[in-house]
Length: 249
Image 1 (cartoon, rainbow, N blue to C red):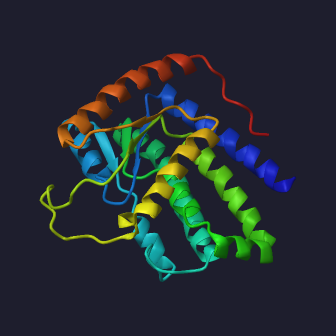
Image 2: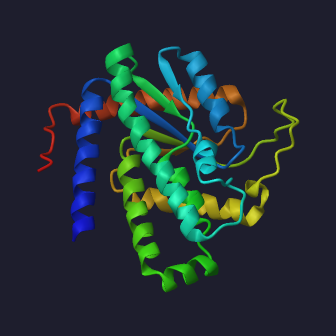
């Protein structure tokens, strides 16, 4: 009952924040996808084309370092869940900072190179028999996971629109010969993350829009994002015009 009350308050707070942002013309664009799929590159290309936009780089690796870990490490599901909860907290902070940056610098559009949907998808891709055993032995882990999923949905609702990059493009072809070898190179793991991203769209009640950018060329990706954001932005601003903020108490 207590957790349900906390979640209801959080959802209301997020909805109020979203409405205030839209009334002020402030929007958050999210880019989701597998590691190495070009999320950060796309965000930088968009900001270069639209100088009024602000790029928000989500440094997940820094949070893993605080836990003395890296995403590729083998660890208990409980520890990975704790790390992903910390990442989700950082999203809440970054989203609140958009309002501050709008007031101080007049910035209205923020482009994120990762979203709560990504954090959800990567964590749920780790749910296997070992994770199930941990949750069976310690029901509090399952309860924390349930709360994490609800928080993910609430935080995602702050984004005006979310774009998904469906796969990996060749790093060598893009002039990057570092030869990254990560978990995302595993076929089954990639498919699991993709399925979780699709699943998240069904869970997220306040989803504004999830659009797949099915193109490899950087210019095409950039133009697709800008064009669809402009269209969705206008629709959302019209739909929330005159709406009242919900009471939080």
